[in-house]
Length: 319
Image (cartoon, rainbow, N blue to C red):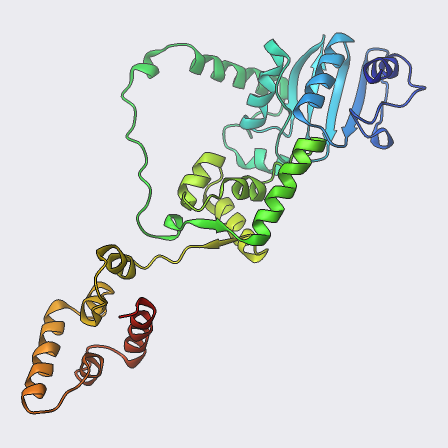
């Protein structure tokens, strides 16, 4: 059995680790003393495999450093059969590790060292064990009722109605194929990608805007902007083109009205529209008919390019 082979490996280094747990070509055990060592695990580690590795290491009272090299990058430390610290781990990574302590479940997923240094809450801790204990106390405070829990909750953040974060991304055909491939690899081989770009891609459904997706994936600010630009550059997502004026006309179900569209777009004001209509009526009484778009250009209310754009929309609407 693979489990027996793995336990044999922990006791005798003569055999190789089974491939379902780790890639044996990338496993190193450097014994500093009989009960302290370093184990580097790499390969396709799903939640089940990572959980089994932790269970086995705790059962064998392994003490030392366990490093995951692959999609789940980082290091954790086990002493007396328990996880006691993590290197290069952020708050989210250590929070995931804490689930291993009482229940032996969870997955090891942390970030790079540079991100820890940028985090003001965590950069001051040089000792992993002290960092781990600090976070453990913080999570305990959140779990237990306190005076903070009685405070009025802040009003929920409203979705922006305008601006870059209000854009609604949707998957392209290439994006659907890529996402389906990632989901298939995770289902069949346990391959889990934890980068920001794949987190965002998995949440694109054509309904949520960027602020909602970024908040759900805990990716905000420059990280979110860079991730979205990368997705666009790779041709995995595109954005819906939302034209309030056109949407208003669609919802009204009426015939396209050129003047109302120009006002809705903010090109002209209602006063300018009325003045142009009066000018059109005055010319009609004299036996001369001019199209409203021509009058707007003649009266310097609109540019020819704006009129051409509105005319193209009118043709698409069948007006």
